[in-house]
Image 1: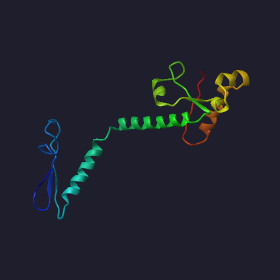
Image 2: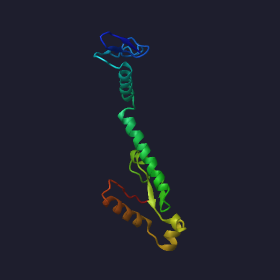
Image 3: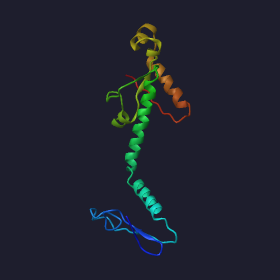
Image 4: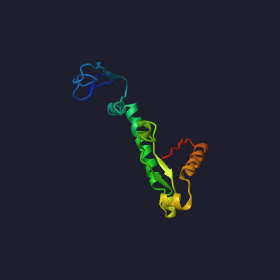
Length: 156
């Protein structure tokens, strides 16, 4: 709400408050914003203040970063799952270096099995495909491409 302060200005107050902050927050300092000037548009000014308040109440930087990481990881998993040459791998403590790496990375390997109509064991056993070497070469190629991708290889 707003109340006129005369002279073409107004005082902006949050509804249900005795000043700039609700009475339910006793430790918060009392803040009043007074806008004074000819031809002020009270509605536009209040809308601007509300948008600033909404931006201030946005998730904390750590929460926003975690949400952005989750979106990027989901997009990467979807991309990998859609490529029949690749296989998503469930990370575990046996070969992954840290809980952060388990939670913050997408784990996959190049097999080519599904795209060629074979199982992984058929490729290795019957066709002599060394998947560890193939994945090491993929890591080298991705990391040297210069596109901001960092990939590491594990053996399991």
